[in-house]
Structure formats: C-alpha cells, structure tokens
Image (cartoon, rainbow, N blue to C red):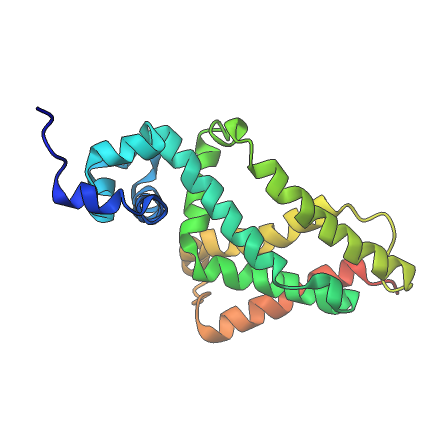
Length: 216
C-alpha cells in the first residue's frame, strides 16, 4: 500500500500556483543571501513550507530553480517598467521616469542586483538556456526606441541613439553606485546612502542622461 503524503504536502498540491510561488519566493531569498554555490535546497524547502520532494517535482535540480528565480526577477522588473506608460508622456519626462524608476527599483530590490552578480560570476550560463528572457526584453527595448524616436522627431533629442546602449548606461549609473556604496563611502568619507545623498545622486544621473540626449 502506498504511504499517504504528509498533510503539509497534500495541502499545498491543491494549489500548485501558490506552491510554485512559495518555492520561488523562498529560493529568491536563499540565492540572494548565499549565491548559487552556497544555497541549500533544504533551507529553501523549509522556508517555503514544503517537502524537498515537492521542490524537485516543480523545478528539478537546484540550477533549474535558480534559472526560474532569475526569470522571475526579470519578469518583475520588466512588468513594473511597463506600468511607467512611457508612451503616454512627452519624451523628456519619459526618460526622467525611466531613470528614477531604475534607481528606486534597485534600492527597493537589492536582491535583484545580487542575483545578477551571481549569474555574471557564472558567465550567464543559466540565462543562456532561457527561452523567456529575450522575449521579455524585446518589448522594453522597443518602448525606449519609441521614446527616442518621438524625441528626435520633435527636435528635442539627438539622432542615432541606440536604445540598448542608453538603457545599459542608465542601469550602470545606478548599479555601480549601489553595489559599491560601502567602499565608495569609505574612500570618500561620505555616507552615499543618506537620504540627501540619494536625492543628489538621482538628480545627477538624470542630468547626465538628459545632457547627452537633449539637443543644444
């Protein structure tokens, strides 16, 4: 006779979507805290309130779960960016919104930067296997391109701006500052994460990006 599943497992399987989300949430925390090498499936299962058997059933091995976490992280930021409605505002305001969103999202979601750091250590080995990530980013790049074209047509923005290069620059301005704030704060003897410093940084980044884009 087959031994019945524990009550906990029988309960979560009635709502597979909730179970998947619980596992992904727990795994995101675990990978963000310990990286891929240091993450432990036992801890993820315990955080999610499921048996390891359930985790393997939904996601397979640890590296497959890590890829699912990465895909989820990218999906969340792209979904939030979509809500900026960049097409509904004038081009200069759209760029201001994008810079501010990127900065504030990175501050609010430090786990996103940590996950990217981990995947870069692995030379994007996991993302290269993803069938979802590229399709997530294509509409976002098209949205930025549309803003740039509207700005060019209106005579506000310079011509020939690559939307991918522009976004990498915007992301980089936020990312480097935040990921290195401890060393930079020490070197320059300044609290770079004080409320005043964060306001000044956003203003500086916005001025830099618009200074490049806006025609004289």
